Length: 253
Image (cartoon, rainbow, N blue to C red; front, side):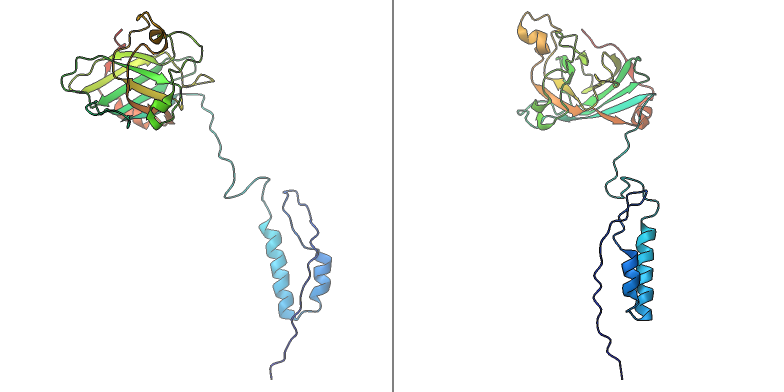
């Protein structure tokens, strides 16, 4: 005949035992040992194994260490920085405007080194007599197309065309712009252009010579045709694009 063993309810007095790693072991071991005497041998073994598991599971856990909540480590860059900007047409464009795609790549060897940019853009009209301005704008926010990129990035509060990232004017050839040039901006420090936007405009930049307020703000370059957010990346895009065929120039005035 099977012997009925009455169920034993264990009331655990949760006294916190602090460990060097701030692991909370909520067992009063002395009371647990005393209560275990009332249990069968099998239950005693299970209880001891459970306590041992709880204690061992806390070993070696450092403060703040958690598989799901640990803070990401931000690398420090003392050498070359690279960035990429994946160009897309503005979704708010009216019909018959060019649908421009491509990318702008950036490379800077040091905080005091020149920032180089590779522009590889396509989608311009076949017959295109219009020189177009390209600028860096304040925000990399594309939630409302290119209109949410803000104005020209101008941390020093100077007149156009002396803003960091005033690329200048470009002419397309066979529907493309494919050029390399230095840009008066930086990927390093408090004035970094990382996270900001590159914007292609409808018209030519008057380079601040238009004689009105708009000329000193944005060069009267017209609507925003395409834009992208400048994001930090590895060297792979630059290395892949660095094949012969690039035209290294200064933008046209």
